[in-house]
Image 1 (tube, rainbow, N blue to C red):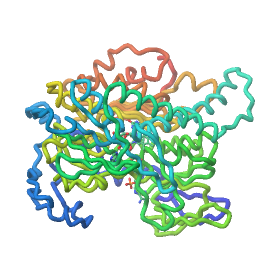
Image 2: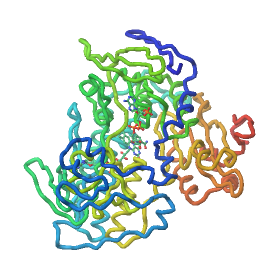
Image 3: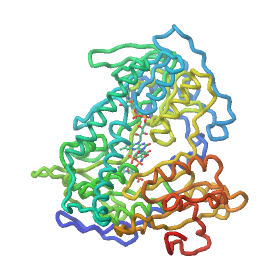
Image 4: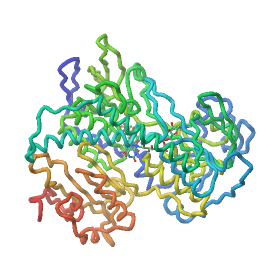
Length: 588
Ligand code: FAD
Ligand code: NDP
């Protein structure tokens, strides 16, 4: 019922479908609640301390950790795994744990494992506050051999190349719009993938170089080695030419994650991930993007903008964890641009054909129907896995929860002198600024006598789809769950960006929404924006929301005209009223 009819010119098996492309998401939303926006407003105690995941891996060492985490294979006394609650209240009320620095006893005061967003920020801040610091970073090549330099995911295979390719795609759109604005533009313009990849990679290499120079100047010792624990204070670093053993009083684990591959035939042999896409040495062509999270939608968006043919395969809902009305508008805006969505569908196998193209078989999970199609590229965007495996955590007594590490309000693991920040920690937003701020604040608490903790609540974020979506605070669903439907008021409105008129761009999905307390102060719980430059629009409002923004304040804020951000100051229609939220004109 939920699979979209997708007519393929060749090799297609057709799924039957209803037109209800977007409705499916809502019905499933409550089933899947594992998302960080909800977790921001919950405490961590719902996660049971467990060593099952470690034991499942079958290492004799890890399986000897007792259920309460009291003894490890090496005979180390492991503190029990009973972290205090860490919700926002606890964050402000529990005393900050201080450590004493025992200078001279170890090679370093601090060893940071992972030279990405969180690790580098932490290492540099610690040195700036007088600590002796080493930072290890090591990248294992992808199955097709892609590798990169220091700086972690964001710089090399994440935010930066993604934003540059998104920009390339927006520029293509802008060139066509320019013609409507009177520019004499050659209408045969087309992108040059190899040139784009080369420009993006050159930029990344320059950032890698600047990072290394910066580390040297700031006196952080950079070690290009894979770290694994020997004991709670000793790390073995696997270098190009042999191993090196280093000791430290304190460790920060900031190893981040890598893309998952589905467990189906041909996935690893023939599919690629975002780790490969930004340096792909051939045009992606017709691309099956499997996964409808941030990465899947963003990649499909810029591939379409660059003139390729992406199809998005959606297992259940689009943008799990986000406000589902907004998520469905994002998907609809992509479909309007000609990106097909295969809903309720999972891949079954990938085979390489004699002509080198990839035959993908897939199944509609609702009807059980089997379909197939041929693609030039299959991109797995099915989530990411924390890189705990190489760390040999049992040797240090640190317990992992599946592939993540649980930390308390101080970012401490169950072993008091071993901390973790960034994507590797359980249940927090996997975003660069989150990793950076958490790493920096941790270093200040450790070495600068600071009491300031990381606040993981109300983190603003943007999905860089062709029409961008940004939000901060609660989704409508989570606000209803937290406060009850009668206690929230949703202000909303469609709008028409002035600059869309001349090129006659679709304004159908330009929409803003404020989710607020219904009575009393009318405190704003969440803001959602779908439109151009969404991240730039929502960033300032994020500060306002964190400072206690209310609906009266929002309405008494004078807008900047003509902008799209001003639409938040013009909100007056509530969902409850049932009034039409479509604007009559641009300026009244
Ligand atoms: P990482 O940056 O992943 O760094 C960890 C480093 O540790 C890596 O270099 C890794 O190779 C290394 N390492 C791992 N194990 C070891 C070991 N045992 N020894 C030594 N080194 C090790 N976030 C945003 O905020 N905005 C965006 O627009 C955005 N876009 C993204 C787009 C994509 C395609 C992806 C994949 C991610 C994106 N992110 C974005 C998320 C962001 O990249 C991550 O949240 C951020 O990089 C996490 O930083 P980190 O320090 O935790 O880990
Ligand atoms: P997500 O977890 O957000 O999305 C994974 C998607 O893959 C979901 O749609 C999921 O479906 C689907 N999926 C999972 N397993 C399978 C399978 N076996 N077959 C088919 N589909 C499957 O992960 P992403 O990789 O997109 O992003 C990881 C993180 O990186 C994000 O959470 C974000 O924090 C960060 N990031 C941030 C960006 C930004 O700030 N703009 C951009 C990109 C990444 P289902 O819902 O059914 O589980």
